Image (cartoon, rainbow, N blue to C red; front, top):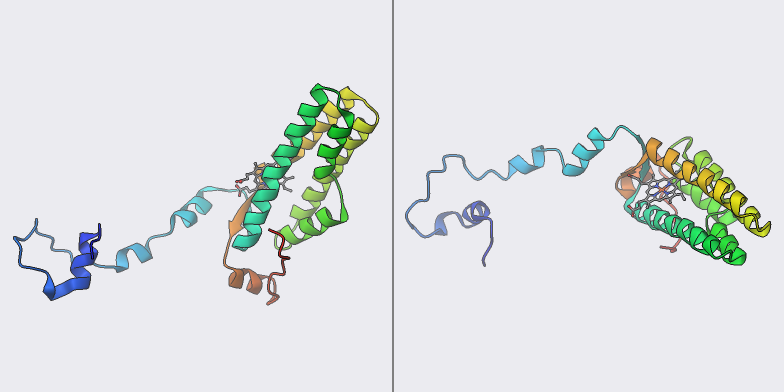
Length: 186
Ligand code: HEC
């Protein structure tokens, strides 16, 4: 078995290591303990990021980021459709980020461990509703205004919050023992 970690090989194979000329003296025994006592890169990053954490287990974090990328795509489509005055398409794109019972439920879920997060999410979706309304009114200036207003909700939220990914077990404990209930929807 070949490995790129000679120290670990030495540790694992011990006495069976062939008596080849000793490499440069290494007085420190190959201690496997060193890495575990160092903070993880993730912990270091969290320590440097002073935004408020939104705790969530990995599957929720993945879902949230996928939704975020979809939000960005929706805004891009709003502008793309606006450029050719395709009002139906502006409205459809805006509706993807507008208020709906499903969206509200997802926001409640995402912000369950971060007081204030859900409210900010709902406010964002309400701003996007105004884009759809402006599209129904065929009012380009209002579409632009409400899109800008919606984007300021994106940037304000990003400035305030960050994901804090933790194990499903830790999250369940944080939530008072209730296992994170999350549908099969990716
Ligand atoms: C209520 C809060 C909130 C709102 C509103 C919001 N986001 Fe986010 N978004 C987040 C959080 C939290 C993250 C994770 C950021 C982190 O941990 O650094 C994120 C991450 C992202 C990412 C990165 C996704 C990835 O794959 O890493 C994109 C892109 C993004 N948001 C786009 C948007 C856009 C576009 C809007 C508005 C149309 C928006 N977001 C509105 C909270 C929000």
